Image (cartoon, rainbow, N blue to C red):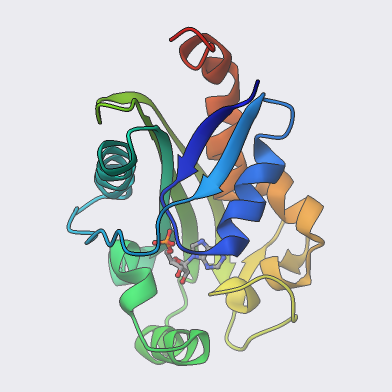
Length: 195
Ligand code: IMP
């Protein structure tokens, strides 16, 4: 019988993405209860992933998984970082603010980073991993896929923005994809049905 892993998000898109990464792992993923709200007070992606996983596990009495991610721009000293989601009200506003703050800066280097944490039913953190994807910030958006900052994040090796990639290609090179790839081999040992 599949064991339940509660995803510490209210976002069905994130649930679907995690299901794709964890397909075949023998775990059944489900969204956290809507009324459970968790404030992301951490100063790092790892701290936020841990607090979301931990609080969701404790509140539901199940194993829980959480991720936290964002964009770090070198010339902005790593901003917007953990504030990526709070940088504006909509994706368009967040992108406009970032492009305004970067202005004509020549150094467009940036990275997406993602931390993933899994907590036991008592809230103790059982596993953690991180992944990054380096790229460059364009001067204007390109492409219509994905979400968030995808249209301005260009990956030179693929000559495409995240928003121009197929979901499969994005998953294979993205910060979230890399964090989950690093997590998977450990998952079997820690999440065995008896534990
Ligand atoms: P969170 O991980 O749900 O807290 O979201 C962090 C924020 O970072 C999102 O709202 C997006 O603005 C941004 N972000 C994280 N991952 C991606 C991505 O793969 N593409 C575009 N934006 C992202």
